[in-house]
Image (tube, rainbow, N blue to C red; front, top):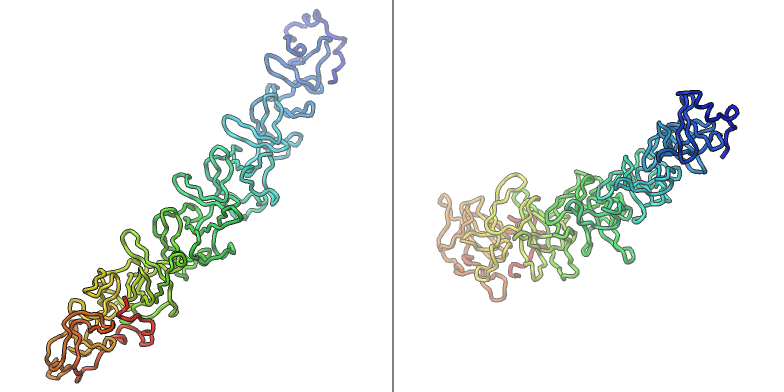
Length: 541
């Protein structure tokens, strides 16, 4: 270090004493401090003033500048390192200082940390009062995304490394066991409109969770992709080599948007929540419609299992081959839907109720005509209530059509060979002396009594749908509508289409319709006879 030349022929001790109270001296570990004209100077043993170095006193170090005066509240560069001295001139140690960068007073202020030696911490991680901080190569405390080597992540070359990436809050402390909502690490500083995402930083390490379904965040499960982004909406697990990969599935992400048997799919709450739904129903758009959330597109009900997986019937593994056509009651008749295309259907019991699902996991509703059954599903017409119901109905049901008019139906309450019932299947034939066809009550409409043709089996019914079984003439205003004086009525229920079987109870032969038009059941129930090609054989159980 350079020493200043001796002051005025080196002041002797006697001369200093002669100056009286204007000068005070004290011993220090390096040199001797003396107060001259209100300023402290540090002298060596030769009486020379120290310059551009640290001198100590009472355990503190003070920096003296070019003129030997103590530097205060400023940066100090010494032996290639940087220090900061406080308002008394003492070196700052083990503490922070908010100030402008060294030798650039016009720059924005930043936080700097000075170590036990007083040196500015640079390009390293420090722990202060139990919290972790990162400093860059110039000693600035970092906020936002950082890496362990102290380099702030701001470009595409510095994507998330699950073991070497952290996020620091506005106070600079590394966030642990908490959420942050921010832009991706790859976003540049000037990308003001960059998308933001939720990230969860692990307890203890502060690393973001990546490619994982985590089960212990505030008691909820969340799913994260390879970049640590919390996923929401439809999420699928796929394989990438030996590792699992989670992806948001919608058309924006250019992923496969069709749910398929065997898929491991989850549904997470909205963008501001995102937890995995479990053991419950959700009503939402199909994956391909989710991104736009187009109100013009239908929403469907899906069932979420206890483990959070969306229920998608594994039709291949189960050998299911049940086929069904969807119908709706319009203007008093069943009208085929879904463009006349069949569904592959699976029955599932949820909370003691039966539901039907298609191969994409969508709960089915309204009327379904099973035409190809399996061990678990009998052929026949089923009813599942409105779009927000979906549970299989049994027994007597009143269903309104699109005009608000009500119609009576009856669906089997149990599977009983004696009564020719199958649980959930619409009755065809006699039930409690009422005539039904695929579940719909058939009754006389234009006349007091009418003859009804049910697949070439005949019944006489009144306007309440009650089956008549007396050998008599059925009249209205004196006119004979149906002549059954010579008719034969079946006395017991039987399967009408099995070999050697007899028609259902009170079906009739040897009857004529005089003045009343015969009702054809298929025409009454279905919108056009051509749909009969989709109907099951009545005797097939």
